[in-house]
Image 1 (tube, rainbow, N blue to C red):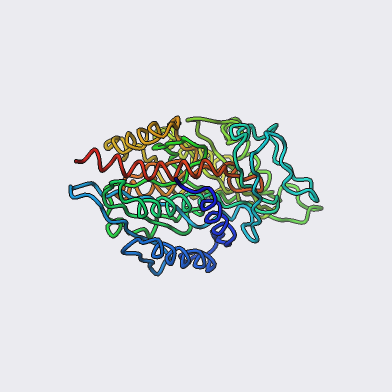
Image 2 (cartoon, helix red, strand yellow):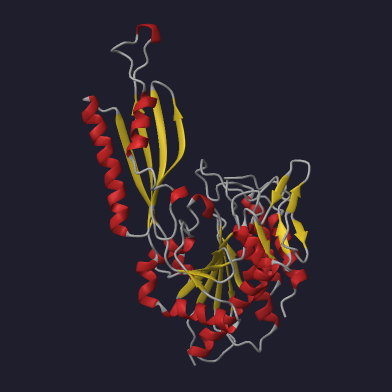
Length: 413
């Protein structure tokens, strides 16, 4: 059996190392502190008995668990990222362990009156009676995706210690900078050498995902003219008012707070402005490629219309694609999803097959030639002070990894 105490110790050890990434940096990894955990992981992978443990100049880690069967088995991989989001601080994480959760409010920080409540976060009630790991209310936790790393390392350690579980060659990969969209950018798929892989980067127990958003980013710049307000009639052009026209011309209900499931959106996540210039930063998301293209065209058309209205170029827009829906690359090899689904069923886990309302390293890797569905890692409320993870979910995810390896070897006898 996989030890609860070992899972907790390993996870706490990872999350107390600050690995926040930085989108403003042009290095890989984007922050030097990511090396602290990366180098420790290399030592740990060697210590548990993995082979071909490598770390490159960009902190991408790879390792091998050799096959223990004498027949040909496809090489499979398991991948997670060790950086945490810059959306909320990951420095000085102080995990709190809640044993036998009673279904009531959890006081994260009494002094600041920060409460994790099932009245607001209903998913908490799924884990009544279980052991939860939470924040102290002042930082994120880092289960995204140090839970995934915990599960992969624990699964490899368990398979090394239990050679009666038959498996083919398994490759392990840990990446920096996933949270700023660069996790797969310098991933050497050829060196990794897997036929397919799974990212352990989902949330709720049972999640199994092979669809994600098509994604783009847009930067809208609005130019105005500053004139002394006392003498501005017919001369001043206030860029902030034009920017407001742009914002209000997009569908108001097609925003993150009004959409779910397969519904796409426009998300204005940053605005900075003065009379002379206002800058709007958007992300554009849609599962359907046709709708995704239409969203980008709508923003370009709106730009053109405002320029025509003001009879000069007052608005410019730059739209850059970020990643695409991995469904196109995974559907031709759906047996890799079927194996993960069967592994969950054999472990009495109800598979929750759904589309990701976001992105994952697996999306980019799938387009780089490594089909890569996403499996639950167990955490909830990522990227903020209310993040938590049930220890039992991490144990189940670890068991899923082992079972996938076992099924893959069995099916290829």
